[in-house]
Length: 98
Image 1 (spheres, rainbow, N blue to C red):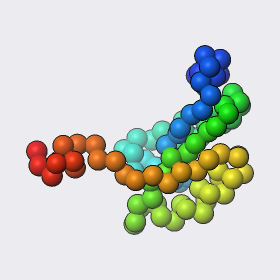
Image 2: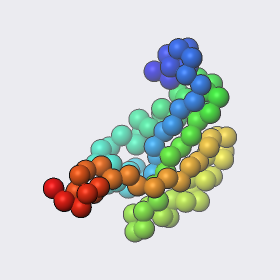
Image 3: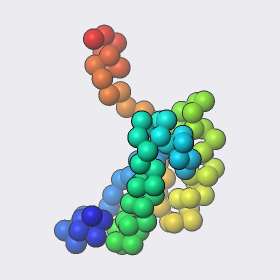
Image 4: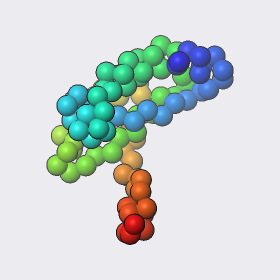
């Protein structure tokens, strides 16, 4: 898919990656797609996107130990690592009510 996107003219991609630890990734996301994400990053690099941004949410007690490994991972691949704020995903989170 990365090559098709690049061929279609897409110049940059954002990829969410909160941890390099597979178990922690599964706990955070509720899915065991860690290897898919890593393969997607490699595919994006291979496709030659102008920019590849990794979006990371650091959460106390869950993945803050991943700061240095993620910085090193991104640096070794010449990727942009961005630390972003966790976004609310339900009306309870946003409005504080059901």
